[in-house]
Image (cartoon, rainbow over all chains, first blue to last red; front, top):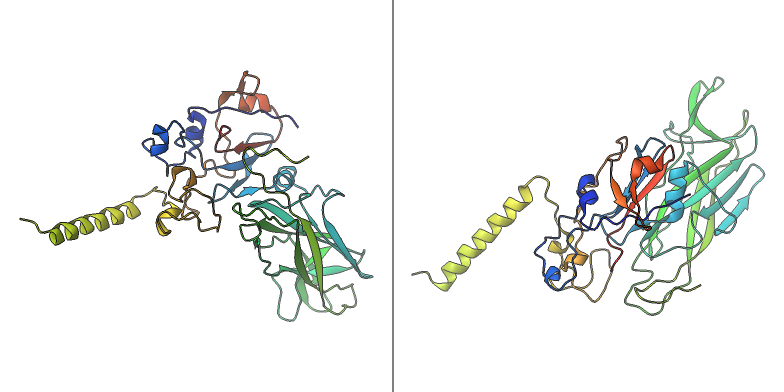
Length: 244
Length: 110
């Protein structure tokens, strides 16, 4: 992966893209003090394909909120690049192995990472996904309210419709490997730039609800909780030496 | 002769009209700090720093309605800028047939 750092000193490209921050005017007082804020963009990220066409974009209201490197990388690759050193936890039954892991090695202040929950089903088994008729349990991932963590909506993969002639229904199923992605962002409740005492870890309870079935039988629906201990990266102050 | 009260009432009326007009102008981005206590140092995400929220460096949109540039499915514009080595780079040409990630930071100098 190569990179260029571009200087858009007169904001020409920022304007070309149409993302000039219009909440700041050229007449704002800081200009007179010699430090200009006018000309900054609304910060964000575009991911493009091989033709330079946008496939994903990440923009947040607050300038301090950004996507993590892992979240952007996975979006650009179109797949999860799971690495062995990221925080993870596993749980196994005879039918399915469940693991939860983060897209990055640590959580960072106002940086949106992705918490993945992966279900690996034995061959010949399946689970259900929405939409479903009454009486069927869809696969659900829930992260309970955790102080210091802003949790977004879980993204579920696409299901495949499967006919069940004996039952006379077609149901949406998941087979083999199922990755559910939940955006998580540590916020000022966890570490506030005003505080000197910063936490080193955040324990996140991840609940899963699922029902595994074979061609002929269904196992009891299960609810399990995995507690994922996520390291929290140090809050970097401008001008402070970077920890190694 | 206008009394103080008349002047104040007129000014308030003008202010309300101006605010209402701003809210209706299409394409205007409403700043978040307008709904916060003036002079406060804590923004509506709970981030507290020693600079008031209405400072130009701290202003951000009150809602998700703000311009975010090219949409999904659109090709990024052509542009050329000097890179970290001082060379003029044409983005699409340099990208060639590769996927890319284009990141806009606010500043590299503060």
